[in-house]
Length: 521
Image (cartoon, rainbow, N blue to C red; front, top):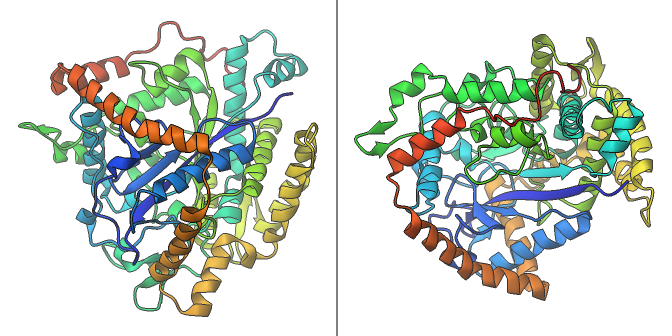
């Protein structure tokens, strides 16, 4: 059948040894964050982002990710990479420096987009970190599934995209389970809050706040949230609806954003005053993706050539792991995503969409509460009860994935994680809260201690020589590439951005997809 292919994007704030956010520029020795393929920044100059290539084996992905950390630590001096999703100690909104990508039009656009995020949501929200898990299913699988389902009347790419959207809908119905199993952010530093302390939080030590049963404050209403986007009602029923809704959001003005202003006499405050500046501003726990071509927007790439892979976006960093993720979790995620593909996935109504949002909110805020009940198919169910039913099905999918493997890796991953269902203290969030309560440590102090230990370990570990040579070469070639991009840019930025949004509004004339060819329509 072939193997799943996956890559990881992993974020982590740079801090000093005491857990204060770094104010230093992105280190020159790590390369150009505009042009480097593997080491860049997310929102902030201080927010490192590592991007691995695509690998067929989880171990290869982790080995590459580990060498990115080792290479960085040999060049970071005394700075640390923060291993938790909720940020380190901040000193107000302005202590989170917006990333600077240089003077090119593309670099300027990246910076102004981030200025817009600051104006709309504040920088502190953008200092939250996580892991994005990107997976594409084997190309050999699609013709087999298409024949089994008797769907040969559809073009293969259209069938493939429709089935990816089936996967996404089933994922959306069940992503609460990932928040429970892997959520690792039940606590935060007081400096994260700019207003009153929410009722769900209670004091721990002097500077720490905890939510006693929370799994992932990152994914709760305290994390990445946008009430304006909630009205978009993107429930992933079809690719055409998804593309059309996003494209409309990028073209629809929003009064509150209009009051911020856009280009005020050369002072760019945001890219536009619309519901979304660009597609990337849409927050979701999962996204359909396609690698873009030159001058192409993400939705145009999807429209032209269909879904290529999916991006899971609801994963916290596990602060107990130097890489934030391990092979057991990756094997579980692969099994979970294949289960989502092979399960029935009827369309999601607006009413069900709201229930699914409610489930994710309940689990992120109080998923370890034994009295918690979720709404599953119109019935109230205990989390562990529903989880056990899902695990029973995951074992069957794991057996399929283990065909051709030397060991039953996927079944072992399911077995290793199953005890967490009835023992919430085994989850990363439960472990972190227990450690804080037993030690009395402040959140920042404890995580900084973990970061110092991980830094010492990673600095001492040997690197793969080929990776070391590659990253060393990319440091200079990426800087050279940025210089060439900047020297070649002669178009005024105003004209560049006007042309970009003119293109972004266009539908792809050669689209292989329409409503009649998407699964379920």
